[in-house]
Image (cartoon, rainbow, N blue to C red):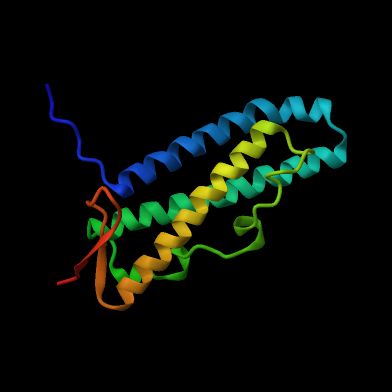
Length: 154
C-alpha cells in the first residue's frame, strides 16, 4: 500500500480552491437557466453579478495559488511572483461581503458567496505575509501543517 501523501497548507488550500471552483461551475451551469425562467430581468442581472463576483474571486485565488506553487518549486523567481500579474486586486467586487445576506440571491449562491469570500480573504492575508517575507529576502515554506513558516532564500 502506498504511503499517504504529505499534505501542506498550500496543498490543502489549492485543493479547496479547485473543489470550490468546480462547485461554482456546476452551480452556475445548473441554476442559471432555471433562474432565467423563474426571475424577472432585474433579479437575473443581480444574480448574474453575484456569479461574476464569485468567479472573479476564484480566478484570482487560483492564479495566486498556482504562482505560489511555481515559486516554491523554483519555476518562477520571487521577482516574477511579486509582479502585478500575480497580485490580488483589492476591488470592491472581491473584498466586499455584499450579497451574503441578500434575500434576492438564492440560498445556494449566498453560501458560495460566503465561502469564496472566506477563501479570498485567507489568500489576501497569506499574500501579505508572503510579500513581506519576500521583501525581506525570505521565501515561505508551506510544509508546516500549522501554517506557513519562513526559510531563507539562500
